[in-house]
Image (cartoon, rainbow, N blue to C red; front, side, top):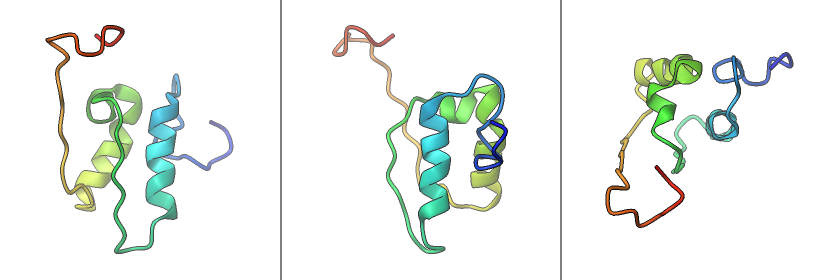
Length: 78
């Protein structure tokens, strides 16, 4: 949080998936892409709003899919 390494996701109660998503962007070359599977909170949580705002403003988001676990294929996931 205080290192400055994750300026977009290193806030509040830090979720590790968010900082790994930010790290994936940091290590890519300018025209590179990364496929990252993370909870939909990457786009909706208050602690990741600056990250999501940045990928929208820089037009670096290619696609975002959100899946529901209605059939309980993953019993531990709500």
